[in-house]
Amino acid sequence: SQQGEEDPQALSIQEGENATMNCSYKTSINNLQWYRQNSGRGLVHLILIRSNEREKHSGRLRVTLDTSKKSSSLLITASRAADTASYFCGDRGSTLGRLYFGRGTQLTVWP
Amino acid sequence: GAVVSQHPSWVICKSGTSVKIECRSLDFQATTMFWYRQFPKQSLMLMATSNEGSKATYEQGVEKDKFLINHASLTLSTLTVTSAHPEDSSFYICSARVSSGGQAYNEQFFGPGTRLTVL
Image (tube, rainbow over all chains, first blue to last red; front, top):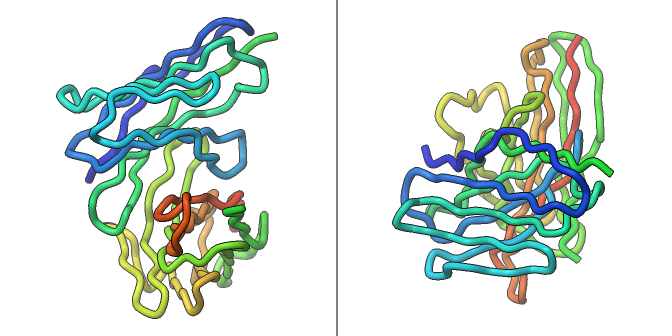
């Protein structure tokens, strides 16, 4: 089945630093979405990038997509302690919009 | 806008009992909802796609008689874990896909999750 795989599995940084997470997927996609999940909570949609886009910005978030390498990256600039969470990428196949997720990257931002 | 709720937030039950979890789209219609389960520090695993007015589509390896899904209206899907066992203990999350027009059309929004513990 399609499944995004995030890298690294865990990342620990200081406030103010940038955090970069990567995601790889297996097959072709319509779009790729990044979500965050605070411990024991549901997912919050962060940003969507379509298969014909290469880069997208939203506030402190920057997402890139390389369809030739089947990979995407999420950059969080000027990180804050409140950014501490797990981050998942979900690739959406064409059938019924199912989302498949990788294991996620656990980001810890120290104040 | 685009809020999805789940009820209950957490539930503890005895082995052998059945548990129903509700997923509601509060301010939009959703012909399609999805059910996921998540083990600690693991990914969300898609269990099934819930289709309003028709049968759910289950992912490979998910027992449809074990996890009953009903999507009777455009705003409500239910997941019933039948004859629950301790190995069914998990975090269950639903998402709803916006089926009406507008900026969020076709996007998915997630509920806060339901923590199930089976003793």
